[in-house]
Image 1 (cartoon, rainbow, N blue to C red):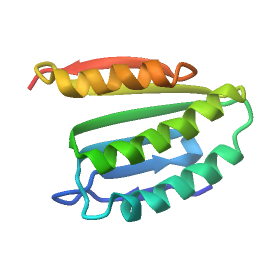
Image 2: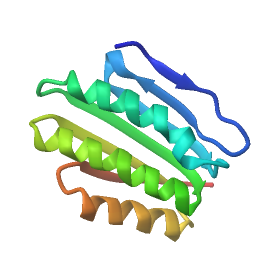
Image 3: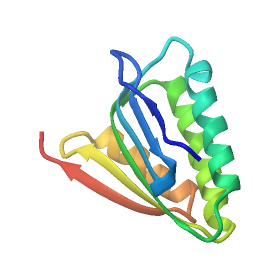
Image 4: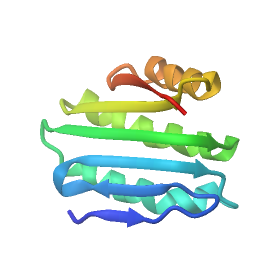
Length: 128
């Protein structure tokens, strides 16, 4: 499967899903006009990628400074898929980057860790 890349805009994150090396990155801010439209292709590509995994390790890095409530729903859909892949014998490692002073982003990450226990979760504080 080929790499999937979307450059960041003022209201959408950089999406760098390097499927051949099993590295997925979301970075920036996420408050698109239509989160369902923006994340639709991302989720479809992720589904295809997960369908091809066979007991492999996937490194996921999320470095979102801000995301709105509709993006939150889409992120939960993404992590639900990744959690299912982990339950099927793959190793999913999530590095959740958050500003050292941003408790909201950290708490969301900790909620993900609780809701999706099959994902290996690592909180990574970043100095601003």
